[in-house]
Image (cartoon, rainbow, N blue to C red; front, side):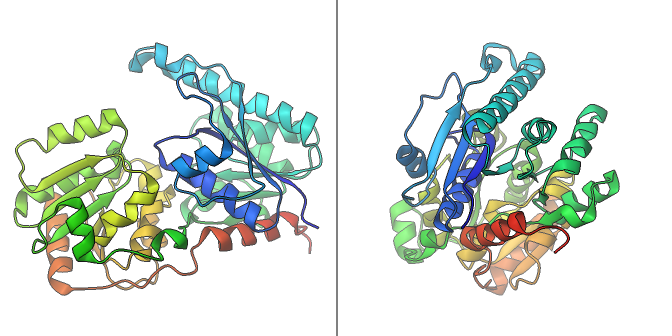
Length: 384
């Protein structure tokens, strides 16, 4: 019998960032795989509390009977401070959430398996003798204190889940026991791609010229995502339409300012996850123009969009970075461009648009298969 499972993530739910989608998709997949699952997330001051069903719908996740999503109180006064002064309140929010989540687990779920995306939660549980704790890492911290905490937590964790090979490599270099480290990339939900509209129907709904070539980008607009490079490439390629969907409001405003005056760039802002396949269905080529720095871009990221692009069968133009080559490994229909280089990106996009390449769906990279593998890893002793 599979033990109950508690997931811990300092995520805003419902939220606009990829983390919010990732943790809800993962939680739902664990529940469907047979583990009674509870997702603990942060109770944020400016986000009204919502039911499990409402959160799943907002994040584009299929209804999942039995799944519980619970908010955890934390110190939260980040948004009351100017952005330049938010570091300290952000750290206090992280720490207060992590400790509150650990206390909740120890009092209400002491026998459960735990998979925490929060280093401090895992460390606290390990220090209290919780022997069924695993830690999922999407980056390796740079500061000496948090690296020391990471080693302390990893020593007592059952498994350390690395989101990419780059995270794994840095964990091993830091001194984490190799036998404990498992690499599991992000994934996609095939249910969202079962009934994709035709290209003509998708373009009609989005009011796009049916005869025009379309380059699509979906996802966050943080600087390291490289959308500014994509916009500069659009200046050199006036014929295709560059369709950009996603981003927090402040990032959308910044990117729109960068694209001011470009008639071939359309920025639609954040779209509900269930609507993203519509944008992919209308496109000829998808782009991942990541910057070469920081390390989260070049070495650590496992982009949700990579798997969604593949699921939609789109040719992909991606920055030539270890993180993206790993996520797209073995796939046809991928053209790589030099990162940070609009001219190289433009040439690669032209090649993809002219070549009519096609990529096969990422059939194995589903949330369901990921959940099955992780449940097996978390219940298998290291010496087996």
